Length: 266
Ligand code: NAI
Image (cartoon, rainbow, N blue to C red; front, side):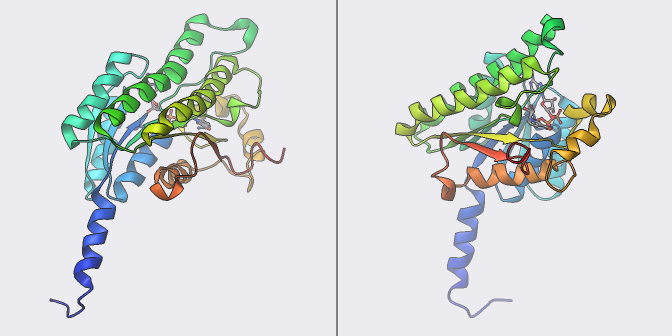
């Protein structure tokens, strides 16, 4: 039924503008934090490119988004392969015409205690968690610069980027690197209006921590989180979405803790 309110037209226009502008590429979108971030961005009207090497999980995320009326596509990618990551960014632009948000989130666990490293796993951890993020920053940064887009690049670090814990030597190295790559890239991309941010979750209930659970460490992990329960991946996704917004423009070159006190109070 038509309304007599003359402002309805403008209100409607503003809603459309605010909710359909952006294109977000999210790596690790098949599971955990990446899946929840994909759902969150899509629920706010962003078009989401769900990227992962787990094709079934990625397609499922896309279906979850589409079932709720959102817009998303899946692109298979191994983030440790630079050509794959470049192709991902190009595909996003081919599909949706632009790229506003690059969330470099895909990651794997560590390679064991320092003196008994599985060196293949060591190199794989560095390749995925560190080089994968570097490739994402480079590909998205170049594309945003080329298209003149004042975008945002968000990288998942961890409290383990600055707090040591036994048995996760390679993982620490990569997350420390993610923090410094975020700061360094933010400095260089600022003249182009592109922000770069690291988010640092604490203990989040996703498949990546299954190994800790299996070795009986669940209670000690819970104890590190305020409230005594693991952080939910959707809570991390909410924070990632918030820092992606233009209103958060002062958050740049920063490490945003999304850890429910993990690194602050123990
Ligand atoms: P998850 O295991 O649920 O998700 C990781 C996703 O990355 C998976 O879908 C996996 O298929 C994908 N992936 C792994 N290697 C890939 C590759 N080479 N190319 C493309 N995709 C790949 O785990 P979660 O927790 O959602 O992990 C997301 C990020 O959060 C990771 O970077 C992790 O290090 C980080 N993180 C997680 C914490 C936790 O307690 N769960 C705490 C702090 C950081």
